[in-house]
Length: 356
Image (cartoon, rainbow, N blue to C red; front, side, top):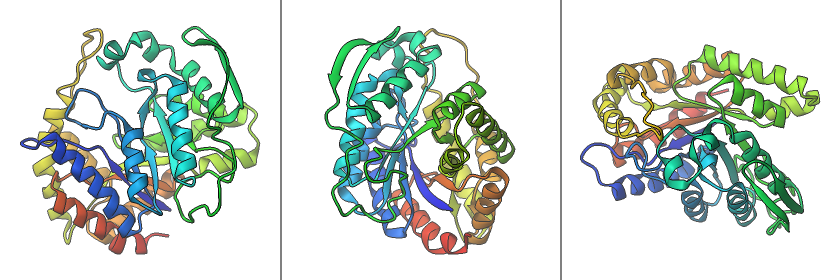
């Protein structure tokens, strides 16, 4: 089992945006010091739910500040970016970090981002498979051209080549899946059977959201396995990719479960109201909002929130039920820097030693 921190750079009520970003950077430092496997960075636009608009840019900063820990995006929103530009950034981070970078991509939501960045609703509803295919070709081939519905350009050289051998030494225990010359690992955020099938056909591991319970995640993993086998992947390839699925969740470690739940239920509903309530759809479609208090309580029920023993037991139970052995855990649920750093430290010193 490999446990990482999930960092949104969340802006809680009464906080400035620089405060949220400062806490995000310090969380990466704390995660490396605590012995965690990776830091996973979210990307959002125009909402205080998360004030990091470029997960790759923040990843570059964190890779430069750290020496061992893996850093990944969870996720970079592909409909808002040109796949070649994102591929170039991923290759750069992979090569300059010694293989510690993982590129996570997702479809995002039907938000006003699509209007601002020019992708439009079509990029969200239909364009993701084409964009993902182009991105993967850029990371794997020496020359790439495109003649699709959205992307068309003559063949060009890929520079820098993500699949070139890395100069030794490659840092041990980096938390990434890439090998010498393999290029950066790529994972895909999956929220629907359609996205699960797409990831499986490409043999790509999934990132499954913190809103999903173990039963739903187990069903998605089972569907992924069936689709991967039907796509012709070998048994070895299926098992290798399946070992790299990531389960997102929430973690709060305290002396008592009551204290852990209380600390999150005091802070997270206000963040949800402020952050999720700020989303605007690109086409003014209606959307339903979760009840912030009920959603916080649901997350506390599903994820490692409580004593160190309870947290370890819940992680082990999720791994057993779903077959997922990698975790990206939201550790900033109190919104407080000192509390976040303590939470990460206890996760490393008191929870990790109890895991299989």
